[in-house]
Structures are given as structure tokens and as C-alpha cells.
Amino acid sequence: MDQKRLTGSIEKTWNDSIIERLIAYVRIPNKSPQFDPNWERNGHMEAAVKLMADWCRAQPLPGSRVEVRRLPGRTPLLLVDVPGELPGTVLLYGHLDKQPEFTGWLPGLGPWEPVIRDGRLYGRGAADDGYAVFSSLTAIAALKEQRVRLPRCLVLIEACEESGSGDLPAHLATLGSALGEPALVVCLDAECGNYEQVWCTTSLRGLVDGTLRVRVLKEGVHSGMATGIAPTPFRILEQLLARIENPVTGDVLLDELQCAIPKDRRAQAAAAARTLGGSVAGKLPWASTAQPISNDPTELIINSTWRATVAVTGAEGLPPLGSAGNVLLPEVAVKLSLRVPPSCDAARAAAAVREALLRDPPYGAQVSFEEGSATGGWNAPAFAPWLEEAINRASRAVYERDAVHIGCGGTIPFMGMLGERFPRTQFFITGVLGPHANAHGPNEFLALEYAKQLTACVSLVLADHAQILSS
Image 1 (tube, rainbow, N blue to C red):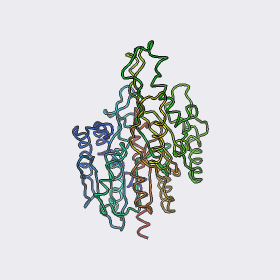
Image 2: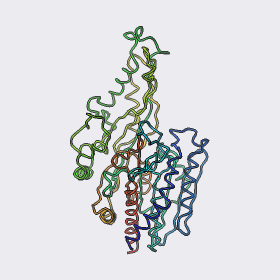
Image 3: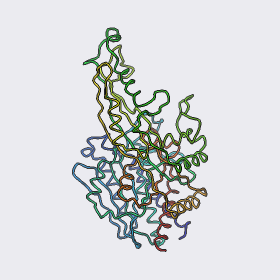
Image 4: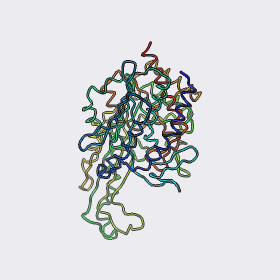
């Protein structure tokens, strides 16, 4: 195989068609169902899946089958089946649904208006992870162009990942044996510590979320008349949150959300910290004098990949400052997002959180916890020697630097589903969410050159896998 020809072909496809399609994709506000309950009626998800399916059908992959699978009341599933010349199946995964707009976009930037600036495509969803289907098929097509024999390649793009992949099990059930038993899974929905080498994800945290609501009064009352008699719901909220998180250190207090950290994952975190140094914390957009929790980059990596954390991601009942009168508020609610360790039982963790928040409400206040998702994490099986070497070889060939292995603080539910279903499968999980790419927040961007290079790395790993099958 001619690597120069390979990278040239990938570069051409990106420049000639992918960037233009990603620009069109960014303009579609196809928010995940959790953030757009009327997604089906609004039609944005349909527009996004059609855009991708049309592009897939136009690719030079003779014999491939592009299918949009539908189930009543569920988001669609895009499936591209590329026949192979070798036995077995490789599964390539991504998603097309998006997080909501969020606030704080820089002047001239916005979630639904794509802007290319300094080699970065700004806008919601291109990096997380609309590029995945384009990158996956382009990696395959570049090998087919050089007549590299491959196993069957199945590209699966779901439309519910940002809502916990609730529709995916139903789609997998209808697929049945058509999915095959993948020997290798490639996922392009993860993080990268920098834009200078391949970053291979070895674990994912799980997610438990829900809405905590505290009600004290039937209606708001003049604060001069009510405070000192009635407790404020905000103070009760603080007391309840202190049951699950130390408000000073941020340590999660419930045993059900703890787990032992494997020695190999600690060693990988230390190696990644040596590569990244101060950029572990430096990748975040700190406000002036604000500082990280620790000055030890290894601890920061472990904190964000193998320890439980609590975040308040939304609130109701608090008026905007401009209309905040002197009123004791009757009710306050917050959305909680708890990241749980990769090996933690998410259902057990969710039950423990619920029990801690609801028992013995202070002052007899009305307290409720409406559970959202409880999604387990995932810890990768040991790499087969060929895969570890293939990833390293690809990173050296494209970036001239070794790959780095690291855990990811986010959640990809499909990996846990696949790991349970196919325990012998090997996983190559990587992505483009590097420093300041800011998926889910403002100013999200896709680093275009890195995405092109990563596409080439996927091609090289697929080629090495094919060589193993042929030997």
C-alpha cells in the first residue's frame, strides 16, 4: 500500500466533499430527543440523516448498502454495509444527534452558523461527532482504491447518543444476527489530549442524572415577611447536595459510587500526564484567577476518568437578576449530572443517590428526584498485541509520535452494550475532542487537519487488521 497515495486520497475527499457537507450539517439544529421532545415533528433529525445517507450513497464503494432504519417513535439509525473480501466484520460507530445551543459563543460564532477560522470548523456537532461517518467511509474507500482486501465493514450511526442511547437497544434487537460478531470496533467519538498524535481511549465513565426539586411554599412571599420563619429552598438544596458530595473537596461521599482503580489504568494516566503536563488543566477556559482542584496532572486525569463527580447543569425557580425581587422563592430545582467510575454499577449508584436525597427532608419540605438516565461505564479489554502495535504504528506514520492511552471522562453507552454482547471484541476508540474543542459548550470546533490525519490513522489500523486476517 502506498501511504502517500492514501493520505492524498483522504485529503482530496475531505476538501472536495466532506467539509462542505459538515458545514451543511452544522446548520441543522438536530438536537437529541432529551433536548427536543418534538424532534420527529420538527424534522431536523430527518434532515441530518438524509444529508449523511445521500453522501454515503455517493461514495466509490461498489456493492455497499446504505440503509436508514426506522422504528415507530424512535430516532433513526443509519447503517452502511460495505462487503469485504476477507472473513469477519469491523464495526465503525458514531452518532449524529447534537447537544443544545448553550450560551457564551464568541462574537461571530454560533451553534448553527458554521465558521471556518484558523483551520477550525466552529459550530455544534461537527466534532461531536458528525464527522465520524464521513471519516469512517473515507478511510475504507482509500483502502479499496488501492485494492486492499478488507473484511466486511459496517458503519453504524445512531441519533440518540446524547440522550443516553435509549433507542439503540431496540435497533440492535431488530438487527439481530445481521450485526455479526465484530472482531474490531472503531469509535470516533472520544477525546484527544493534543493534536499531535493518536489518543486511544481505554475506559469511559458512566452517567447518572436527574432533576432534584425542593418546594417549601405554595407561592413566593415577601422576603422581609417570610425569611426567618420559612427555610429557603436553596438552603435545603445545599443540605441535600452535601449528602452526596463534600462541598469543600468535591469528593463524592456514597460508597456505591466508588471503585478500585486498576494498576494499569493508573500507569496509563501517569504516562499521559508526562506527555501533557500542565495542559491537562490548561485545556480548560479558566476565569482569571480560578485554579484546578490539584496541581498534579496525574491526579487530574484520574479524577476526570476514574472517580465519581457531581455537577449541577441547570436550574429552575431562580429568576433572572433583572427581575429578582425581594421574594422568598417557593421552589427551586436543579439538574444533576453525576459521572460514575467505569466499573461502577450505574443502577445501584442511581438508587443510592435517590435514597440519599429523599430521606428525612429538612423541615419536612417537599423533595422529589426525577431520575433521567443511569448508564454504565466501560473498561476496555486488554489490547491484542497486534492492535496495540497497529495503533502505535499508525500514530508514528502520520504524526511521527507514539500513541497515548488514556481514560475518557464522558460516556458512550454503545461501548458498554457491545462489550457485554461481544466480550472477545477489540476496541479502537479515539476522537478529535482536544484542547478547547469544547463539545457541549460554546465555541465547539473540529480541528480539520487533525481530523484528516486521524482518518488516515483509521485506514492504517484497518489495513493492519486485514493483514492479520490474511496471515
